[in-house]
Image (cartoon, rainbow, N blue to C red):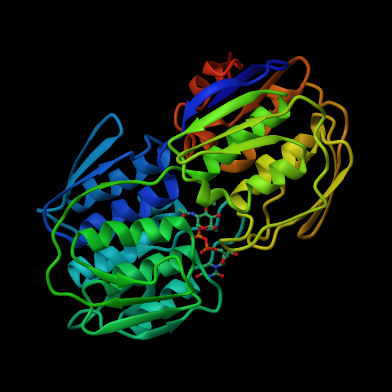
Length: 421
Ligand code: EPZ
């Protein structure tokens, strides 16, 4: 197990190029299975989660290679349509492979993805939608045996919640289905638009991605393609929060400001100076942060749940009280307990967290509890006085590429050590 040793008190200043979006790269890696041949994906972040996805593709028979930020996947020789438990357990969002494998192979067997640190992570919306498109599903000792006699057929799918993963699974099943599929109450995240962009370049006929209703006209032939993944809006938000908390001045390059429309106004309400450019944004903050009245997580284009933890760290040193309401996941405040060990004044009651800002956090030994909570603790340690430790860095490695290297290039003082050290 590894930990970060962090010396707090340095301002983050300078330029940083933001990595490709983890939550785009994972469904697009799964989508490569739908076409036979070699897809080339640029700006694909090198993360534990993308490594897990590549392990699944290799297990299925694909040839995969990475050269820097470019990943090549050759799906010519698919030999299996099963994902074993040991691979499913590494990443619960592996459920996204279900629609792609079934579309390519006509069947799929995979184990139930477990819950994770932030909640139960049910998949009922995925399964009921795919069943409406012709999939038969049989539960067998923790495994799902899925088959589609004659392939998927189009259907009108109404999602009771705009689930990102369920929207993606339906799109992956629908692109080569017989007939047309219409998804109502679809997720509108930029990562959905990116998945549709990759698939349409392969020859799919998807319209409405990014809106509440998506129409997919099934096609017979699709070809692999070369595609560049969008930047990661949550990683971008994390770096902006680090600059805000340390009184720094940071410019993020290679980002799409449209993806941050529900986030940048919060930094401005907190007193930061934010400047938007074509594909960059800069943030500076030279005085104590102001509180933000209310931060409610919502499906896109609302405030993203993945940004809740980094923003809670930021609000913990604001000059007043901020109320958070976490509407997406039922157990996404674990980082609050660790922030309290650093002196934060946070009261959690169900989905509500009340953060009463203090002048400064103090150093402590804390443990990452999940991906975004871990990143939040790193930001808190950067802003705190003294030397802190953040354990369970593997959670952070799932979603942040070269995290300590990027932060140290901005002036942070972080070293990675083994927990036994
Ligand atoms: C995606 O997860 C992201 N992961 C999550 O990012 C993100 O937090 C989430 O979308 C919301 O934006 C990836 O894209 C790999 P959902 P996903 O299905 O698809 C309920 C990160 O930190 N639900 O939109 O699993 C579910 O319980 C990760 O990068 C059902 O009830 O999210 C949750 O309350 C964390 N039944 C809500 O919907 C279902 O069948 C949102 O889930 C599916 C979901």
